Length: 246
Image (tube, rainbow, N blue to C red; front, side, top):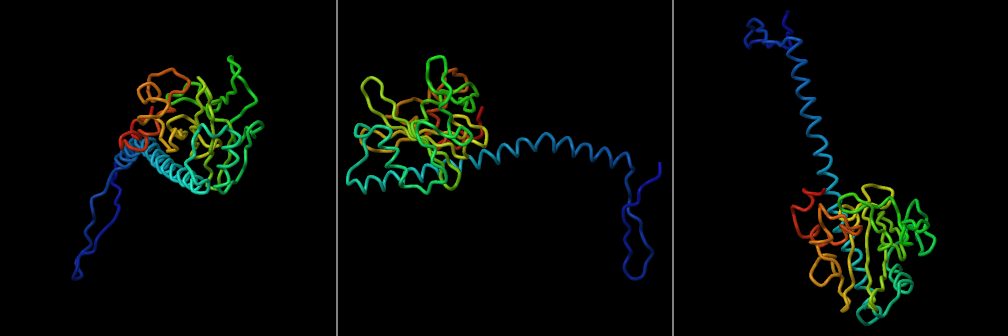
């Protein structure tokens, strides 16, 4: 088979041209094939790593924004915000004033293309949105996120929850950091929950003193329909968290 001559150099001082060694067509095709295989193996990993970095940055941004809003609300009220002082409607109506809102989802009739759906109930009679999944991609109990929602101008969906069980009032603030229209819509991936403590402090869910523990609610094997709700603290503090998402 003839060699492909890819270039030639002219020697200095008027010397004769010296041809460079070439490659056969088969050698070129084999090399391109190897490059293609390597690219096919590495590109998905690179894409996933880049997306995880974006999600990590988005979480930190969301944490900053909801913290600043709560601090401003505390200042304006002249006291710390405590769950016992609010029901969902009142807190939602007051808290959303501290954001630049792109779309107000309201409480009872949110637009399901933008916000968590409240028109479908599960077998227990609780509202559910099948678009949302747990940390390890099972069906999620989205009714723990949907007592008032709004989308702010950078696309973050902010969700308020005021669960009242065992005569205890609690306030949760959750964020879908890239909005409902963008995947993965999974707890602990792009959906994270914070809790306002009894003393008015904003706690990343999963830290000591918050409602849900990492051991049970941030697990790669749990089948709990709230698995992932307690991943927030770990996602903010553990540098390896984003490398090991299920």
